[in-house]
Amino acid sequence: MAQQEDCPFCQIARGEMDTELLLDEENLVAFEDLDPQAPVHVLIIPRDHVTSDTDLSPEILKQLIDATQTIAQQQGVAESGYATRINHGEDAGQMVDHLHVHVVGGRELGFP
Image (cartoon, rainbow, N blue to C red; front, side, top):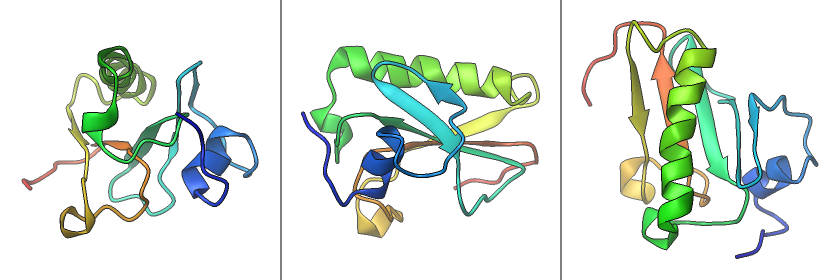
């Protein structure tokens, strides 16, 4: 898969935006959400432009899951608790059409 020129997450993955990467791996990157909903709110994205979790290879899906654990440890919320979420589609609140995993913690979280 390739990246899209006008996708802001692809631009971050290419290093074209002034964004601090909290995780920088071959197939994915992580960075703080621009509109955090908790003290810790990190987004993990595949470097390639993927719009749906059904388009992910099992290898990349495993890397995303592993990255959530790494970010939770790095951000100090692994012990107290954190939530992970993938919003798919406009009705679910997806604002950027590039698959991303939210890692949210640092306060008590309700459901949903």
